[in-house]
Image (cartoon, rainbow, N blue to C red):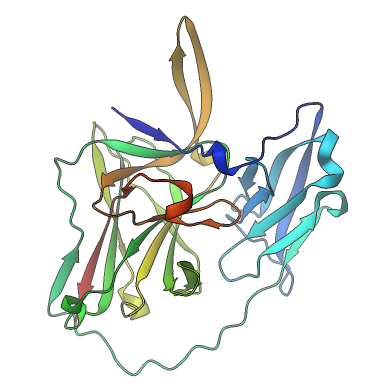
Length: 296
């Protein structure tokens, strides 16, 4: 079974070697003081990062040699992105919540008719994307089509992942396509959508069906990007055994492993502290396997 490791060294600056220390901090809301779970934390310009736990705390290994030169970037849905010099970090990191002006919704879906966009066959080749040592979001772009006019509401999103007896958590994002910068734009849903995969025995992949009909969200005319964000917590980690010649070694990975499909066009985007466009970071046309169920 093929597996596509989530390592893109061409885009990253290597970490320095030497002695290291650990950051042990909490991420909290600057207004309420409540912990922020599943925030992602990157050491800028490196492949090092982690995620906050359900209690908002995290531990991150930092190389001492360049500690004074590095910055952390912390992101979470509903909060402004925050960049801090590592040398200035205290026990608590505060994120400022965003304020959104929510327009009144006057059109409601009737859900009498439905359309499945990008259905996935059970015969699909079993290749998967795996997260290793860097918090990441992998996104798939959906172009608006005229056939969506009569079924324009997004009812369900189906994400396909490798079967496992363990359950894994991941964050689901919906972005409007930014036609000016040609990358994911604003979050269409202003709250965190945490998805837990089902425990499944056997080989192959399973469907994770997420019902978002309560948001009454219409498919954007500019296009839609669905983002799948790995959460690098202890609960999501597992050890993968690899073989190289006569050597056997274990490497820590983070679930779930997302199914990959081959596309006729390059429809994927990558976020690792910043968005990398599909043209820059890969010439491959494989994308995360995601289906949409549209309703009227």
